[in-house]
Length: 427
Image 1 (tube, one colour):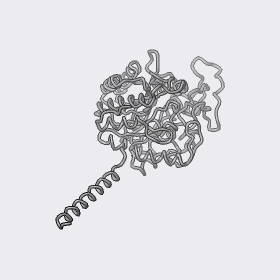
Image 2 (cartoon, rainbow, N blue to C red; image 1 turned 90 degrees about the horizontal axis):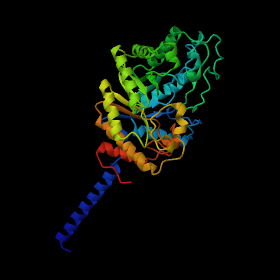
Image 3 (tube, rainbow, N blue to C red; image 1 turned 60 degrees about the vertical axis):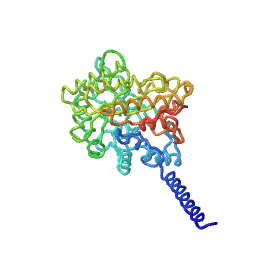
Image 4 (tube, rainbow, N blue to C red; image 1 turned 180 degrees about the vertical axis):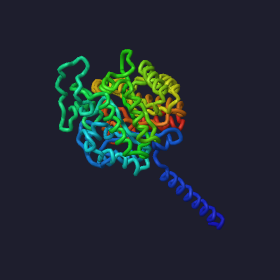
């Protein structure tokens, strides 16, 4: 073999070796797509997490039934995919302030949640300060009879913490607390003071750490002509309980973004109530700084066009829009429902899955994220309500991007493809 030929083969071998090495390096260095990376130039992509993740402890409860191997996988998934977190339960009044008085707080789980976010450099949301559910009965108790009652009925059954028996989902998203309290009531002044003290204490403790607060949750009525829900907050204090809650939160942390949060804003009638409420608060200079749209929807609705219209109308308020509790129900019992009402949840997950559920779920998520990106001037946060189907409050509806084993579903790929501008995969 001539020297020239030998040289040719030597150079060819080196080139081939380099090409193969380069290909191997490129393949090895290419990391899997993540939600937070795909949307980093547009929105925070967040997730609601439970106590198992923030404390690293296995918990046995109705919708959180994970062994430590599963908890570790759930935790790794949160860190890999999301850059924003909300607590499912541990900042709700019933969990953080179960007993009356300054020594009635239980800060441990909430501290763990905040520290988890800080240590992982995440944008932290606080959920929620004032809600008609998961509020201890002692908050509303007093010596005043309900209107029109001279002999007050006995108080609702209470547990050892002075809260009504939840009847909900344990560590999950059940009602609990003052939701059904019917005993003697506090005065307006007493309830305002309890609200003020609670908000100042909780928001003040996490000042500068929790960036966004759901100040008032689900105060709108679902039906009829009344704008507000007939809650004990509204009955005892009056409709200005919302303004007072925002006032107290702003006093406690002037730099925090204060959010009003509700469900079914895809429904035109509910959306009109939301817009009327926020405009009224804005006219009073109440510091409402963002709108939280829970977006508990189904694979049947809303369509891209319906979600586009909803966001367009919400934008008229001139405030950032946060998608706060996103999931897409695939159960037959929950189609065409956008309700986040905890009392009606069971019926929405009955009947098994719809046919071709994976494809329909992927199509639904793709439509939603197309709408979110179209409105990314206003849509700043999108938070999934749960890490995976196994811990979802609507587990039977398989509503999330990851299955119970933390494996991505076709819907995950669909959401990534929306961000990258790639066409959807054929199913």
